[in-house]
Length: 233
Figure 1 (spheres, helix red, strand yellow):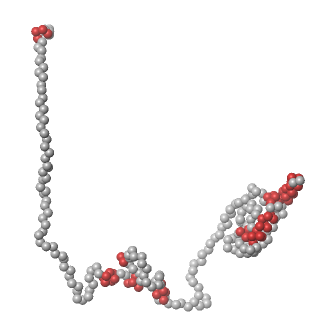
Figure 2: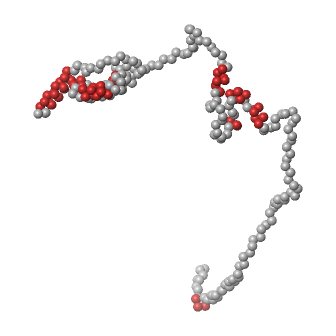
Figure 3: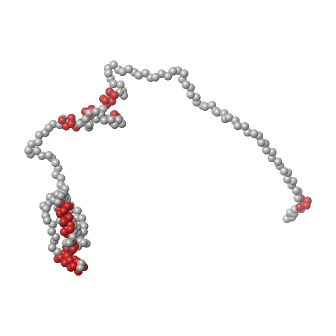
């Protein structure tokens, strides 16, 4: 059986009355109050008895050093340092005032006097190990140095400070006309090495440097002179 659910708005509807509710607010003045401090759990009570300093025991009659005194510190220093006149690190200060007497103190003199003197006679040798040193040429390449003075710049041969400047100037200006010949003998792009020179520290004999014979150098020099003749009227 199916029940028919019907709703009659006129007979079954009931209106609900809304009642306005009011909320009363109470405004009371707030008074500031001083906070109450709680009693601490621990209290410090001063001792009313007078404070007394600890008594220092008197020095022993036997003359023994008290702990921490200068006499005990001197005994703890190594006797070897005392003999050398040195101070331990604990006695170093920041005082920069120099002490009186000779400075610095000759501490090595007293020690050297204790070494026995040994007389060296003919034939006495020392047991030194033989050491050898191999020298290897650096072989540094460079372009031709047309105005170099090897015996002056490499070996230090000179005619004195009064004459050498004039000799170097004459050598320089004398090689200017021969520059085309040197360029032909030693091209600009050619690499040279210092393997033909003496080792550092050797004393080679002085030699007069001469230009090498070169057919190409003679050709370059002749062409340069011919071109200057036609160029300069």
